[in-house]
Length: 145
Image 1 (cartoon, rainbow, N blue to C red):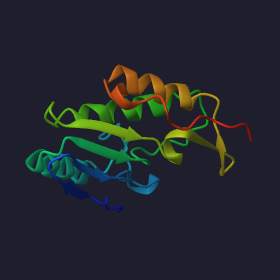
Image 2: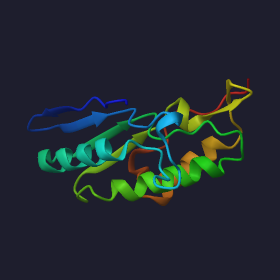
Image 3: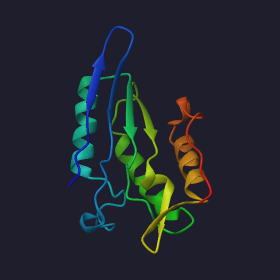
Image 4: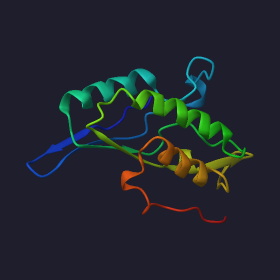
């Protein structure tokens, strides 16, 4: 089981928290009961804790979901959409800023991690569809292997 790092900094001009890597490993993930692949008890507890602390920004740093499927991004889209449902637990006053990791942007083919021609656009569309795009536009872009 992976545990996220949660950090809070507060001052009169800045208030933020961040966490990352709250996904389950493949051996612990049951897609029929958890379409997001997130460690749901941990993610929900993190969101509840953050809601109590009330930072202005919450950075969710990479490996939010399992990802890695060698498809056209359909599996990633389903996982991210389910993850976004969980994120609605946060009060609207807290701006969520998801940051992609290798699990969101790569695929595995025959056990080898590679860049994907599809996941970058899935990520960008998911960010925009869920209103996370307020600070988007200056992030990584895919490279050809």
